[in-house]
Structures are given as C-alpha cells and as structure tokens.
Image (cartoon, rainbow, N blue to C red):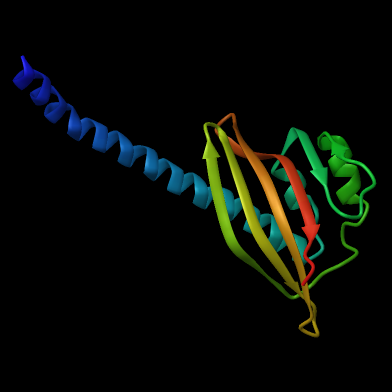
Length: 151
C-alpha cells in the first residue's frame, strides 16, 4: 500500500510542476502587460495628455494624490479631475524605477518609484501604487495613489 501511495505522488509530480510553470508564465505576462499599460499612460502624461490614465481606469476607480483634499471616486470624477489640467504641462522624460506587481487572484498591485525630469534636469520624485483588476479580460486601474517623496 505504501508503494502505491509513493508511486501516485511520483506520477502527479510532473502535473504539479507543469501547472506551476503555467501560473508563473501567466503572472510574468500579466506583470509585463500591467507595467506596459502604466508606461503607455505615462508616455502620454509626459506630453501633457492626461487621458491615457482615464482610458485604463475602471468605472469604480478611486484616486488620491497630495493635491487633493478628498478622494476622487468613480471614472467620471476621475475624468473631470484629470481633464482639468490636460495639456497644461509637459516634461522631456521620466523613469519608472523598482516596478513590482503582486498578484492576488484577479488583482495586480503595481508599486514603483516615479522620477520625472524637467528640461533643466531637475528631478520630481513620487511613489505610486496602482491597483489593477482583471475586468472582461483587460487590466484596469481600480485604485491609484501617488505621493511625493522626501528626497
């Protein structure tokens, strides 16, 4: 009896290993997709186009940044907030540093350090957390929080 029990574990091992690889591959692809969505929105942002973030936002998004007195709730309020300064700024380049995505089912939490550079080379540093949710096979931001760094 003990032999059959050990043999069954041995026979199941390849399936366990294969399923682990599939999940890891999915996570790596999803991580790349989320980071690339963020970078595409930031590429538009540096040109003063705030609508990249609106396009990847979920209907029930919540948003905070240091300039807000209270939370922005819902895509319409998020749209109104970002549209109010669309086209009023720009900067030549940015860096997205230390990007990491943690997955919890259909939730991916992206955290990173953002550094925007002025034309004079001055750095504008932020910490960001973007919570993405898989909705209808598309990763959408459901919560966004940006804060200035001390350095």
